Image (cartoon, rainbow, N blue to C red; front, side, top):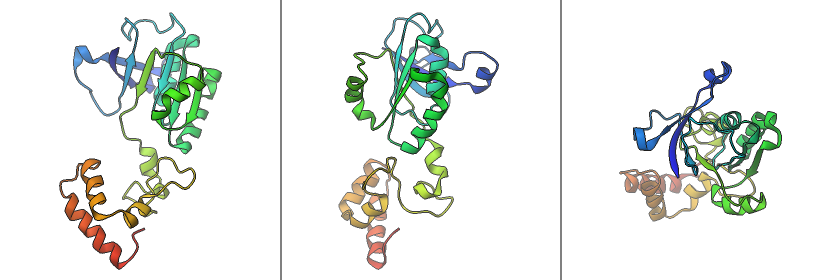
Length: 212
């Protein structure tokens, strides 16, 4: 597949120009800034060529608020369809509203991108023409104090992307995980060089009072 870095240009979209600009990584080898996504195109053509020549099927594995998805649907014309997945149900509601104008060309599912094969079977899609992965960080979770991701405002230590059911919160994890497990999480997922020291501090703090 061709590996592309794509950027949404909202100003261009308002002016009637192409809302999605893609650069082939084989040519540039660079990602210009963090407002990008990676789009894998299984077609022998460049992104600058017409997207309207065939009924392309796209999969957005992390649809977020639907910005890139809307740009792809706009660029692909009436023949293109996009299927989107996201763990965050609150974002998914906003994405659905954003894509409502495209009708049944946009299909959404609440789930994990690891469920993509099962969802493709449910959607009766045998193969994709393009798969999008938005590798940036969404400010949607960080800006909401009740989600527990940020430090700017006080809030519960939640940090769940998917808040359905009884999934464990970060507070549950901090309260129950052994010190060795905390070290592993901080080291492997946070790339934290001081993981053992931080884990020991958490262990000492939770002995005094619950961490919420």
